[in-house]
Each structure stands twice: as structure tokens, then as C-alpha cells.
Length: 278
Ligand code: ZN
Image 1 (cartoon, rainbow, N blue to C red):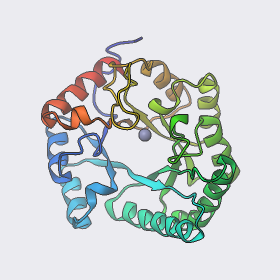
Image 2: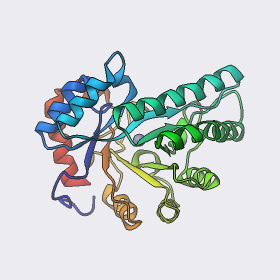
Image 3: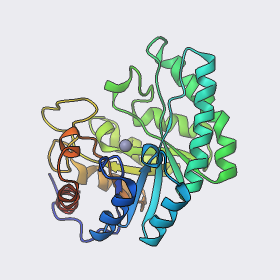
């Protein structure tokens, strides 16, 4: 890892509620705040069964900024009915984002293994077309997150930053951009150029960090803490910031191992890893 100890403060650190999934959101807010974390990205499951207004008040009371709501998307399906349901669900997600005070929704765009990736991408385009007017009206940004190709079967037909850039540029809207997650794009030989391109078009909306463990035990739930794997996060962060990006560094770690651990200790470890390896 290059450039250790490059961070001097936590002003740009954001933690996803999914990272500390065992903590109810009310506790996450308090514990993040106690440890100097000033921003969070809220996963929709963390709001299930909650009074969203009450949660919003608590977040404000602790002076925590909500960076985004995760997640929308999953547009493709062989079923017309399911595609319509997906659009309705995304419109609901836009409402939820507005209610919790999130300026942006991250989109895991979806894929349907019973049809081609091209067809799935055209359905993603149609889904975005359908929800864009609502997003504009509610002033909620939509961030397309390209997912690692190992998720091309049923999670996303958008697998490279180039494909995400193509989609965002097709819409040419201030409300559609891209979320760059190091876990999904670190391997890409065109990464530096595509990050430049993303920034040059004003489409770089979000930056997610974690690490790729070697070996990886599970393709969804074995992400590593920064510094624990093979991703050169400082290098990618450098490329992202050279575009003028001044948003948050969002820690998004799905890990059965860490979810089973003491969450307060885990948050301390996140901060230490952030300071050393981001
Ligand atoms: Zn992500």
C-alpha cells in the first residue's frame, strides 16, 4: 500500500449502515458520533419498521450527514410485471431518500440470467428513463454503481466503469451519475482513464471503499477492511480526487466475520484502517 497515514482527520469519512449491520440505526448514529464519524449512508433495511421522521430527527440531533440511501435498481426481468414493480420500488426509494434527508440513491442496476446482458442493459436504461422525472422533481441524484463482473449473472449488467459512464452520459442529466466502489473496479486496466472521464462529465457522485481479501471466502460477504487485501486504495482515491471530487470516502464492508464481531471495536478498527490505508 502506498501513502500510509495520508489521512489527518475524519471529516470525509462516511460509514454505511450495512457495514455495521447488527446495530439498529439509532445505535449506529450514536456510536458513529461518539467516535467522530460525521456521515453515514443509510441502507433501506435499516429503516424497515421504523418511524423515518424520528430516525431523521435523531440523525440531525447527532449532527450526522446522510450521504446516500442504498439502494435502488434491480430493473431487469423477463417479466413485464416485475419490471413495473421495480420501477415502483425505485420511486418509493426516491421518496424514502427525500424523507431521510439523503440527496442521492445508489443503484445496483440488476441483471437477469435468462436473457442477454445487452437486453438487461436496455431494461436498465428504460427503468432509469421512467424514474428520472421523479428523481428530478424530488431533487434526488441517482448513482449507477458498476459491479464486479462476478455479479453479472443476477446483480448487475453494468460491470465496468466504462459501461456506467456510457449510461450516465446517455442521459446527460445532472441527476444521473456514477458511484465508484473500489471493490468492483480495482482490477480494471482502463480505471484511471474512466475515472478521469467520469469526473470530466460531472458524473462522479460517490466513492466507496473496502478491500479485496486474498483469498476471498465468499463473493458477497467477505469484504475486507482497508489495508487487509490487494486494492491500492490510495492510488484510486488519488485518481478520484484529481477529478475534483470532494465528497465522502464511504466505508462499505459486507462481512459475516465482522458482523459477528463486537461492533464498537469494529468501528474503532474501521477508523484506524481508514487513517492508515486510505
Ligand atoms: Zn458500493
